[in-house]
Length: 154
Ligand SMILES: Cc1cc2nc3c(=O)[nH]c(=O)nc-3n(C[C@H](O)[C@H](O)[C@H](O)COP(=O)(O)O)c2cc1C
Image 1 (cartoon, helix red, strand yellow):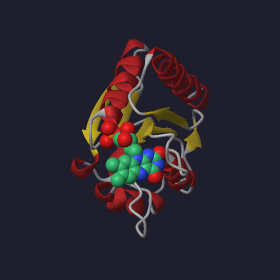
Image 2 (cartoon, rainbow, N blue to C red):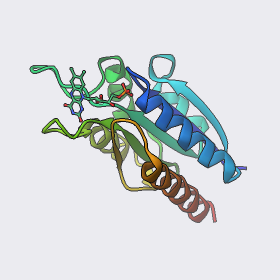
Image 3 (cartoon, rainbow, N blue to C red):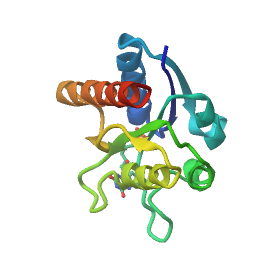
């Protein structure tokens, strides 16, 4: 059975809910999952999973970057590890009101790209809380990850 590790950063709960939807969608597709809040995880935990997911909100406070502050260490670690043979996907909530809409989703994807892992789904950005249409997109995201993982393990 394939395994997935989902790591999330969420301030007001939107991205936590998104991560939980991904978790359920993966479980429905026969994947064994583990969901961890980002401060409780280290990037090396992904070594134990076939499918690696980061779900993060975006936060800009002027001078600082667009990543959740509590997700910075994880971001730095992620860029320096080898995840060759694994499949990754990134998602998260943002607010279309901001110029840099949900850019943390792209930043984590770029970090994954440096690990040698294979991209399994398009970056999925969600405006605020996930609504019915977003849930469909999250299910497609999970399906895409599962399909790519199956293809790689052939
Ligand atoms: C101070 C502040 C700055 C933010 N900056 C951005 C931003 O640059 N881009 C963006 O897409 N969303 C931004 N947001 C919106 C959050 O990403 C959005 O509210 C998101 O739903 C929070 O997710 P969470 O509920 O998982 O914490 C900002 C929110 C706050 C409070």
